[in-house]
Length: 390
Image 1: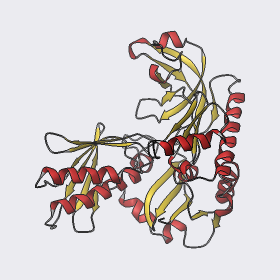
Image 2: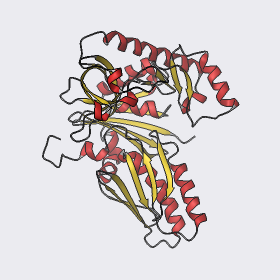
Image 3: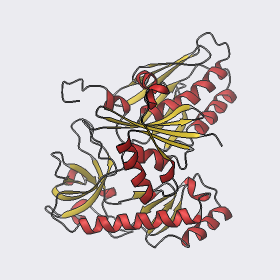
Image 4: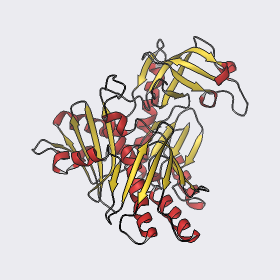
């Protein structure tokens, strides 16, 4: 198994968690105290108004900007088609979770299907039964996993993540119990007045651990930051608590690993490829466009295969969400194109954010989507171009 390290530091308003796989930066999680993310946070909101035309409700979260709750994310009797006005009424208190951060003038997107994520399991307390990640084996292996999980989870709804298939049963049981207790705390706090924040979403370091299982090393710059992460591990990942290493030497973790300069390159549009080609990545409000340049490389397929691997990596590091269109170098045959699509699909298969490769358009462009999760890297690090607060 390729060794994986997680390095965590604090740089001004930024808390950064870098995941190194085989010594190379593969994932990056950043919190900006000046632009805090609400992703995953749970609020006791108050229905501000019903937008019949949108079949949605605006929910006052007490943060100065209302969230939008669409009918598909509202909870009603199962199996019945409902309109938002039959499910909610103005002034009603409602427990909601942020599923997407605010973008521009739009407030955060909300859901009533609250989930609490762990490394191996996701607790869906308003659901029922055990669902299994598509990345895990299906058929008899899936049925066996469900039987094993039924012995450790405590009722209500659960989703088995990809790491659950090989996780120690004792760790699964410990995580399930911790998530159940966290939900009970949410329910207790939800009895108060609305609007109010009930539970904050995971911070950058916690997200890195949740998404990346069992790293070989967890190095945290600063004793206070390390102690905070170790305390979280004690509650939700007890097998990792002893691995949290407080780093206090000079140079710092990110400086020593040259991560600062690598993060700076993620804010640019051009990404060099090892064989002389490059990617040009341009963001617009509607989509992200990637252009592949082969450079002096003679074989278009080889250039495209290398580009596919780097595109998957860049989408994760930049936290690109939404529609992505890629203009690869023209290839000789349909067979080469199919080989490229297979390679691209494999490259994005382990992305924590759901990523779908749809294929070639009539113009020869590859169309794909990546689920929006939190704020794009550029929006976290680049000053607001409209002159607002960073």
